[in-house]
Amino acid sequence: MKITNVTAMILRTPMKKPFTSARGWWYKTKNAMLVKVETDEGIVGWGEAYGPAEITKSVVDTLLKSQIMGENPFDTNILWEKMYQRVEDYDPQGFGVAAISAVDIALWDIKGKALNKPVYELLGGAHRKTLKPYATGLYFWEDEGDFITPSVEEALKYKELGFKGVKMKIALPRKQELKRVEKVYEALGDDIELMVDANHGYNFVDAHWLGRAFDEMNLTWFEEPISPHDLTGYKELREKLHIPMAGGENSFTRFAFKEIIDQRAMDIIQPDICCAGGITETMRISAIAEADGVSLIPHVWGSAVGLQAALHVMAALPPAPHSWKPAPLWMEYEQTENPFRDDLVTSPIVQKDGIVTIPDGVGLGFEINQETIDKYRIA
Ligand code: MG
Image (cartoon, rainbow, N blue to C red; front, side, top):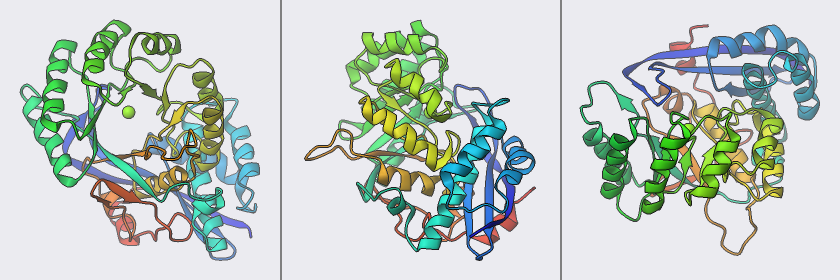
């Protein structure tokens, strides 16, 4: 089989209600950068890159496409290295790797479709057929007053929908933020787990101050409390606090994750399959993490394409540790308004009673809804 065409495309829609996290970027639009890889046998694969769409599209168009045209889509390791060699000297961590991720995911989709198997089978099989989704939300909207009432209402909505975990964004000055977290925690009660995600918006002192309070509440994890560049700071927080430290959504390739793992900087690493290097690279990262006893729970934030790719990887992640009754794997399920999550594929993922089932269709397990592409495609 040979690759005959590679098309990178951008889908875009305005948000009805722009929001932000601690990063302070206002999400005024939702975007998806999708890659469609075509073959001489008529089999088509889909992938997605996480991050600024115009740049990742440009990397695919100008650097990666020429590297894989005419090649065999089954050669995922070889093509990964070929693509990485093309970007490594200029962008070893970042847009280049995100663009590779999109192509790599599409190649795995093709392999699955060609063999008539779900991708998780090609990864060695499913250690689990279900995941435990947690709702990511509780962002910041303008004009929210004390930010507490809308946060509590939103958290309770997720509880009502059946989620067993909720991850809230935190970003306010520490005392104000602690009050907000306490209110959400009290509203959710004991049977719903609460994670907090600071998107590296605090310095060490504030993160430590908040972390001590989170320890008292037994929160599930503290995500990106401080800068991802400060691995020594993460290590110190790990030593001083009980709450698990999580991070990695803005780290790329096995090389960056090896550094985090070697330094024992985090309890939970969160590579995003759509930017850390695709399915191929995330499985390599998983092997390093497992060997060193670090948990891997992918970051997921995109369209249905990236979401379903993540589900196949999560099915194939080894239970770490192997045990009689391993804890179910958490799955990030972002809940802000997003037609590319809900309308892009003919069989979107559903959460029911706190469970999501791994898709078992061929390839990544979906058919693309062309109408959605036609409606939102801008480039
Ligand atoms: Mg995060």
